[in-house]
Image 1 (cartoon, rainbow, N blue to C red):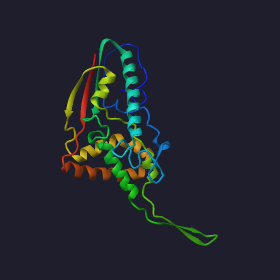
Image 2 (image 1 turned 180 degrees about the horizontal axis):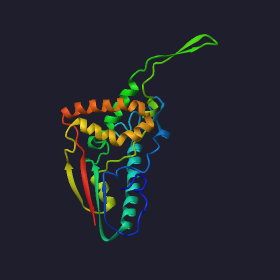
Image 3 (image 1 turned 60 degrees about the vertical axis):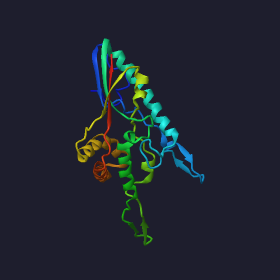
Length: 245
């Protein structure tokens, strides 16, 4: 098993006959610094490049899409180089990764999970806390603070998930090999199972950004969104299997 961070460094000499990676190489070594990047709106206000989103989307500036692709190309190339150096002659790699159907990085099968999570977080931003009352005994006044969202909007605007769902050709151009495409796989039998899966791999990084106390409410909202989407036949992930020998 490789932990995040060990994917991009050589670990052993050329002694391995088989390298197998399942659902890991689409994680990025770092997120792009959208918190330090702004664009001017029509009224000359400086806005975050990816306002209200945590991944590339239809509303993202092109710089966001380019940053994600560039980081994936860099990381995947380093991963292949490191793993190739560990294989014996005629050794093989089998890589299983999510892929998207369209060349458009903002297509739904690329962004769906992160759109759902961003929608749930945005809901927490929109929810108003009760007003807070503060009493200062020395000067004898009451300060009323509010209303505020349960989550600060900036914590959403300045958060990017270090993840990229590649197009098959983007992978093949780096791996220089043929890919065996599994296609549309119904890996989640029901929305509740998928919600648990999303929680399993997003909760640690999301809790660090937004605070663990609010994440139960976020994931409850994710489940609610998924239930409605499953009724409409949305949206199963695509899987790509690469065999490199």
